[in-house]
Length: 114
Image 1 (tube, one colour):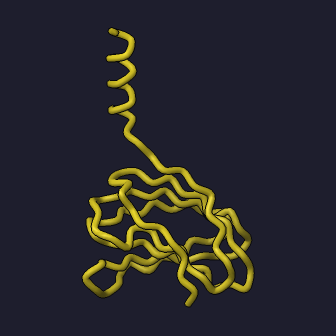
Image 2: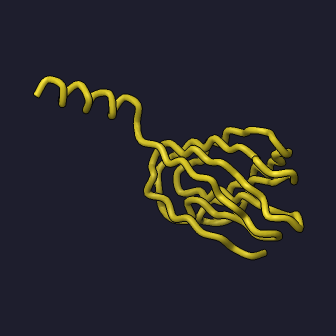
């Protein structure tokens, strides 16, 4: 019983994370969190040969914080409550993005063609 309690504490202290390798088609975008949710921290790694962009879109309207992530680069994005993170592929090639998401994992996920 004591071991189970210790394992539970370790699991709570490390938190839960979502790890994903995401492929985004040419001129498409991946949208994370286009629904009501709490704060989220995203570590993003651009594994492709093309730059990508990220932008934040509060679900009540508007957009802000456009960022370009070059090929092979990493970025950390703090996503506020009720805000979607768009990962945008403006290139003619499919891009590969590795994501590690921490925080409120009750997030919608989907793709949207521009």
